[in-house]
Structure formats: C-alpha cells, structure tokens
Length: 150
Image (cartoon, rainbow, N blue to C red):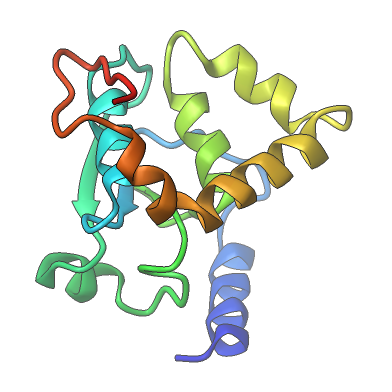
C-alpha cells in the first residue's frame, strides 16, 4: 500500500470515530532491532514508570509485519501505535513515548508546543538519521534502565 492510499484509508477511519479524542490505554513501540541506539532506548523506556502500558515490538519480526505491515514507515522511522489504532511516526512517536512516561509527560507537552516543536523535531530527525552511527557509543548492555557511553 502506498503512502497516499494509506493516508486516505486512515482519514476515512478517523472520520468514523468520535470527534472528541480519546487518550490511548496502551502503546506499542515498533523499533529497529538492528540499531544499538534503538535497543538502548527500548531498555530505558521499559524501565521508566508510565501512565500507559508500553509494549515493544521489533519492526522486522513476523508479528510486526503481520499486524502492522501496511504502515509505510515501518523499519525506517520510529512508529508508535495505540490500542485504538492511532499511529505516530518519527518526532511525533518520540513525543508520544515521552507522553506515556510519568516523569516526562510534562516535557512532552513543552516539546510539542509552538516554542519548542521545531527544535524537538530537528533534534529527533538528526538523531534518527544518525542512529546507526551513534550506536557504537553505547556499551553492549544496559543494566536497570541505565545506559552509559563507552
């Protein structure tokens, strides 16, 4: 499915839902298991107290392709999917992950506001583009949600 068709399908589903947004009750984070930085971020996220349960799924696995194979950004961008089927990609996915965390929800609101949104988006895009190059900076394992630079 191409991006335009996917967006049209998504828009038609959105029009069927209530006009009033509903907060997600659970989020699935689809990540690149071949990226060391991505694996460290998943470990860190998994150890943070959260308002919303987070589950993590390698985007290259059979289960991810079976459940979310029609998402065009799968494998290229951070993708976060709610229990109701909403999808956040790239910088929006990053902010959604922060929104789910108890200690970072306020930051998600600040970073998504008009003053910081352009900066947050650029930061995420630079990190995302260089994620494989940055992976070498991290030691092989993270313990207790704490990762250190090697």
